[in-house]
Image (cartoon, rainbow, N blue to C red; front, side, top):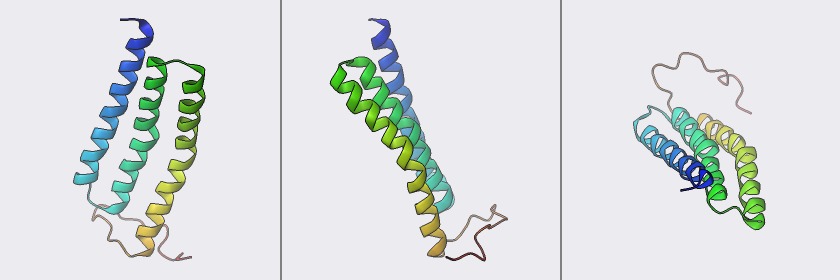
Length: 110
């Protein structure tokens, strides 16, 4: 086993574990806002970890362009998608968890 394959397997394993942990969070977290946060973290970190791990396992120029491009696009679009999900949940009146004490958007429904 080469160092590059060890790095690749480690990155894909970490990425897979992050997505698995986020799936558990998706089931166990109390409200839509916390769930959206868990999924956003999995997409931003887990998917990028898997993409970089695949790049380490198969380092060709074509794979480099495609996988790094995919990772960059994932990192650029995921925060906006999570924001849009949270905003849509707030606009639809999704209930907050009892532990949430402050609502910055309470008076701003635009």
